[in-house]
Length: 396
Ligand SMILES: NC(=O)c1ccc[n+]([C@@H]2O[C@H](COP(=O)([O-])OP(=O)(O)OC[C@H]3O[C@@H](n4cnc5c(N)ncnc54)[C@H](O)[C@@H]3O)[C@@H](O)[C@H]2O)c1
Image (tube, rainbow, N blue to C red; front, side):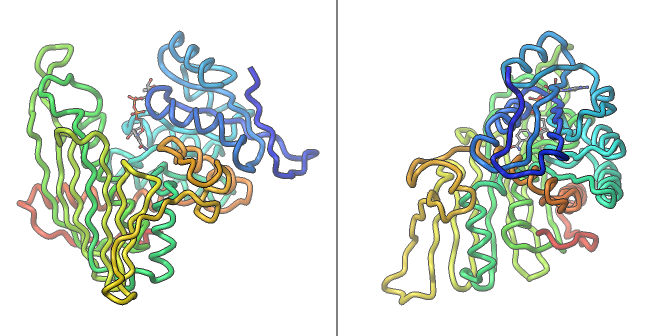
């Protein structure tokens, strides 16, 4: 199997060694990331790299996955892989409880790190990772968190329109991320339903994405938070009979931003009928933007500066070469999907490594989200009282 990806981009081939990549985890995100590593060089000009090692716990299963997803080898001990001289990039697709340990070890070993969201399960772990990332950056070692929705072309376009002032002053944002895979009370226990392995429930899992979008789109930071958490099904069938669910099924929050804008965030994994519904609405004094992940090639835009009798939402098909990332794909109107966001993510990460620049979202940006998640939990524990946040920095 050919796992080397030769770049179209001119590189000094006499000195440049292909980057050796290892991914840790081969299930949901491991598959999505592998797909991205496998096709990125077919569409984008990226530095040369090799899909070297896929890491998992079960030797047979990870070997099968490695062969299927285009990795040259498989391994079961991530520590050994991190020590290898031919590995330069570690892509962490393992559950949240492992992020800090792997990321800090990899950064200290001089490896560039891409880690799935949320940055960590706790604020303390996220702070440790961010400090390790800052130290590594000083040595030219890059790190990035996988908030892949930043790489939906329509949302990248939304960000451009907001930066250009097309919405004027943004007054409020509605962000909702709703799923229903836990609606059935008989759905079994998994690592995602235990606080010690997942950190939190819908909050860390999907509110992290929604909050990152608010920070990304507005380029702003959160100053105040209210929150509420609810677990509707508190026991689920596990290997040892009924087990206690120790995380939330759903969460609600309001966020105040430094600009004075207010965002409402609503997330659930028991919203019956909603499969993976991420919806964003951004309301400014000069216009409005609407986004729905179920129609991710489209952006709704209302320009309130045109005469009112001509106003109305236009549906922009974000599929032109002029739109972010689209030039590399198909002719106009040949739409793309969810998996492309991971390809864009790998592309941006590789280019940042090549250029020696800090990729975004950085671990600092991941930590900002983590502060908001922690404040939502703090507020929820105090009957939704208003929590002040002072430590977050600019989100974009
Ligand atoms: N960006 C997104 O849209 C998105 C979607 C889903 C999950 N995620 C995030 O991705 C991460 C992984 O979630 P997932 O859904 O892929 O989980 P998963 O349960 O499907 O996969 C976890 C993988 O980690 C591996 N793993 C566990 N312990 C390991 C160890 N000690 N050594 C090596 N491998 C080990 C497992 O074998 C498995 O392959 C989480 O942080 C999650 O929040 C992100």
